[in-house]
Image 1 (cartoon, helix red, strand yellow):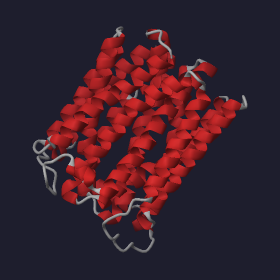
Image 2: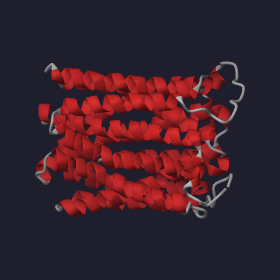
Image 3: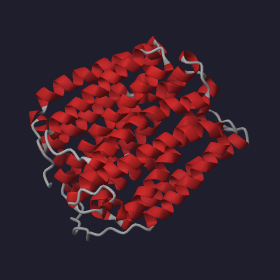
Image 4: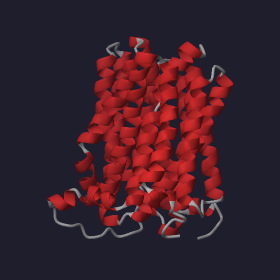
Length: 405
């Protein structure tokens, strides 16, 4: 494996996949800013912001077995493209509902439910495609490259969404339509370099193969569950409209800055991993990153300075990305391709649980206790999870190197 970080982007299929994920990420981030601000404008209720997360999680839970089966049995490229086409339609619904003045909390939540189902397929299919696009030895750096591109988009997306929102939410949603359509076309142009394994005949054992594999692998189970509980407790991004309006007294542009800050830190650490991939002490590094995420979340909760808050969010984003690159690489390298879709479906559920229920937890606690205590309790909880998981999954903490390097 060459150490030249630029060589990986000379790989044609990876470059097109990279561009597709950038477009998808920009659209998602822009839409998140617009939906959050528009919903809070309509209801002024923190719990509604949490409901947006919950309503996107429900279809992920309901479809967990179906998404894995479909991704393992069909062309993953087509599955991903179809999911992105639904995302195009969802953004169009938001745009038209806003233009015709029929947008309300019910329209937003119903549309987000459908988009949650589409993203269940999107995330599962995209996770399984990367190992089929690049050689196994290149995978750790490919994960970092794709992650860095997505984080760069996450910086531009909220900022662009905040600026476009000045012209009205419809301007944001129409732009999301165009970006998601471009992503769909790019995905359709990607070809896998590996021949898919022969698929097993359908049975209940095949249906639950992903869950069975994870249960038997303490490294995979530990990595996925650590991420689940850490992000579940640290899910504070849904509360950023409250901090932007009520704590720092800034408008949509300030919300865009707050949402972009974690991505700035994540992008920085991704570039580091592209140039200097993690070689040793993989397990301990993952636990250290999650602990750093918890500490940064506590600082964010206590801060009354916009500048300090932006720094804390950037550190949290960097720590989270560091752990994500480790987790994704471990899971992909530890999982056989024949069950990768089903394992990735469970991973998608864990990811959806962490992000969506994390948003719901934060919104619910903010409604009861206030936004600052909700974030503070989550940060302390993350540190407690790290301590417990070191004891529960010693095999994960002892991982020294990625298995196929």
